[in-house]
Image (cartoon, rainbow over all chains, first blue to last red; front, side):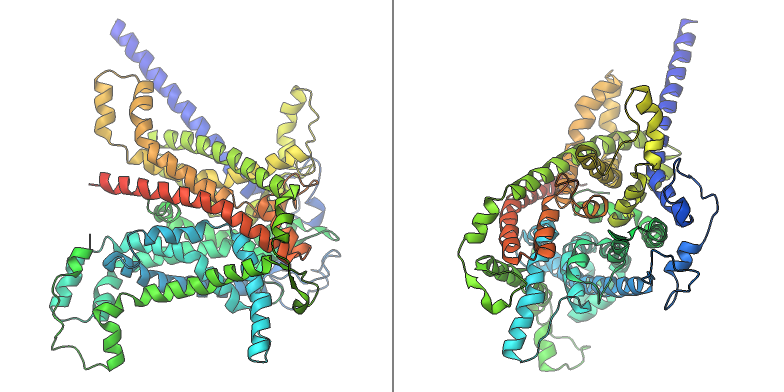
Amino acid sequence: MAAEAARKRKLRRRRLLRAGRHAILLGWTCVIIFPVFWMISTSFKDAGEWVTWPPHWLPHQPTLLNYAQIFAFGTLDPTLSRQATEQAFTIWKGLGDATLVCTTASLLALLLGTFLAYAISRFSVGGKYFRHTILMIRMIPPIVVAISILIYYAIIIPYATTALLGVRISMFDTYVGLVLIYTVTTLPFVIWMMLSFIDEVPYTLEHAARLMGAGRIEVIRRIVLPLVASGMVVTFLFVFILNWAEFLLALTLTHPQVTTLTVLLNKFQSASEGRLYGPQAAIGTVVTIPVVVLGLLIQKHLVKGFSFGTIRK
Amino acid sequence: MTEANTTLPIPTLNANSRPAGGLVRWLASERVFRLIPFLLVEGLFVLTILVPFALTIWISLLKWRANRPFETARFAGFENYEAVLTTDQFWLALARTFYFAGMAVALELSIGFVLAMLVSKCTQSRRLYTTIFLVPMMIVPIVVGYNFSMIYIDSGPLNQILAPFMEAFGVDPRIRWLSHPIAAQWAIIIADIWQWTSLTFLIFLSGFAALPRHLVNAARVMGASPWQTFWWIELPLLKPAIVIAVIIRSMEALKLFDPVVLLTFGGPGTSTQTVAYFLWEQVWVFNKFSFGAAASIVLLIIFSILIFFAIYMLIGYRRRVEESAP
């Protein structure tokens, strides 16, 4: 009898513990969902509902006006343009530039990084601690890089080219300049992620192929690349997300010629016009969705990228 | 480890290979081939990191403002460095950055640890929770800043939620999140916690998953209480994960910039100016290029010490992870 009662008490205690655990986890789930929900909800609100007391949790008169405004082509239709927004805040320029710059920079970094990772993994190029020294580039605060790159792009290169070639060439606010700096800042991530994939390819495979008469480049193309292809896709997506989310370098080194999405989003707040919460929320939603989808696809590998291979999955 | 393999004799004569040009054959030869990617990447780094830094040092020694032609610049020695080191704002911004990073990282670590512990005990709902908890990490930081700027409005949803609690304690429920100095600091810290707890959660979750079950079970069989198992078995085994989370998060948290621009613009006054924001304002708003160059060199020196320390620890822990691998 006593044993029965003790078991029952133990069972009840365990059930209580599980309930408490789920209560805490559900609480954090609410904390996470709340800002995202608020953004999506605001993106469907008209100007009158952006700031009210009490706040409207769901738009009372849902409207697609914000989306129509950011996706408008050319000059704004008078019905779409709000008094506050004389400028055409369309997303197309930002979307196009961000896609172009991020794709090019990620592909370049992937190409260079993969081959360097191969060289590090197979030949220990650059010494034993080379893979760690590469990390330093990632740890330098981007503002320090931004200042020196600004001086380089906007002052030294135009000055030097005028003196030497007689033509003023500036790298400031150009696609090439931004792609170059994005490639450099994401290379450490590519090298680290690709190292973890290439280290797993057995060297004996390559050696066998070499003995059978395949050339170096053929070994890479026919043996190594197919084996790390999925890893390359994951790395590309990870780096793409990083570039897509980058703000400081884009803000400091570009605009108005090149405008990425993050810079565009920032332009919506100006002292004179107040904040355009609705269109901003619509852009935020549009920017967020592809990244979250991509991120969830490579969820398993995220820890590899962020922890530089120090955590084993 | 692979070094030994490469010294094995590899036949250089093969019948199948097509006759290639001299340049291609030279490039594919053992000695040259391994250096091509290395030289390419190193060249890129030198061109985009080292050269600009050298030029930054040179600019930092000049007396020149961007609104005047470059030819009028004159050599000024260490004048700019003196100006940086005697500017209170620089040191205050630096101290504030460390304060924000310390607060945010400490809270992210504790929340992430508790969440990972609870989720690792779940069986059915584990994947669902993991997926939801990872979402903040993938949202673009600038969008996070924007989301919070909307929530922090004086008549916004956060104050509405907090109002009943505040009124119960007799506090004015209308917290001015973005215009009160201390509230604004916490507004930025909270936004950072919201986003990056997911990373510490992820690191700790893989730490918990890698715990050797037999050790925990053995302790339980020997009659250890759950608390004893946690304190004496699990926590010491999780130490590498904790150290790595601290290093990775603090290095990122010290770069804090995006939420400051989106939420407060460094204000009210200078109460939320981080060092990144301070430098940005000096160079891009006030055009003080040589001051900014000197300040960024000072900042780089301060950070290099931290970076070397962080990398030294990462190397040590990575080696330990490799040794413990099966």
